[in-house]
Amino acid sequence: AVNFHDDAVQFRFDEVVSDRSGPTQDLHGLFLISPRDGEPRINWHRSRIDVQPKGKWLPNTAYTVTMLPGLADLSDNLTKQKYSIIFSTGPTIPPFGVLGRLFDWTAQPVAPGAVVEAVLHAGTADSVVYFGVADTTGQFHLGPFGAGESAVVTYIDANHNFKRDLGELWDSTQVTIADTQPYLELLAAKRDTIGPVIS
Image 1 (spheres, rainbow, N blue to C red):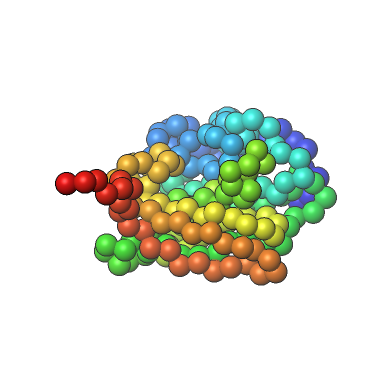
Image 2 (image 1 turned 135 degrees about the vertical axis):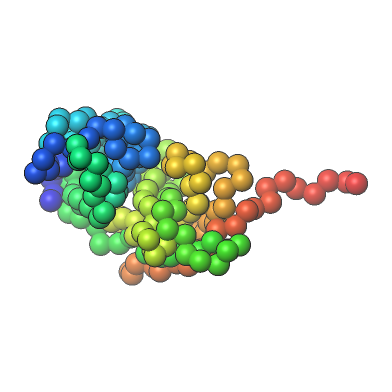
C-alpha cells in the first residue's frame, strides 16, 4: 500500500488471541517495526492487534511491520509463520534493501533469530534504523529503502531484548547500495573492543 495515513497497522484473527504471548509474555517480543524509533506501541483487542511506532510514522517512508511466530490463542496453540506487511506513507515504495545470511563463527552453523540493523545516513540527524530478525536458516532481508550508504550490524540476541549487549556475538559492515540489492554473509563472533595496554 502507498499513501498510508492510518494511526496503526491492524492484524485481525479468526479467533481471540492471548495478550500473554511471546518471549516477554506481553506481545512486545512478537511485533517489529522497520524503520525503528524504539519499542512499538501494541494494543490488544481480543481478535485484533494494533501496532504503532513509539512516535509517529515518518513522512514519505516505506515501512515493514512484522509479526514473528509464537502468537498464542486461548488454547495455547501457537502461530508458526512470520507475517510482514509492507507499505509507504508516501506515493512510492523504494526498490532496494539488504539481503544476507548470518553465521555463528564459533559454532559454524547459521544463526536463526539473530537481530539485523541497517543504519542509513549513520551519524547524522537524518539517520534511520531499519530492523529485522533472521529466519530459521539465518537469512534476513531489510528494507525497502533507497540507494545510498548503509551500516549493517547484526548480533545473536541471547537475551531477546532486541539490543546488542556486552558478550553477545556480532558482526558489522558498510555497504553501498546503488542499483541492486546487495547480498551479505556475516560472521557473528565475540569482538575485542579494548585497546592494548602497556604490561
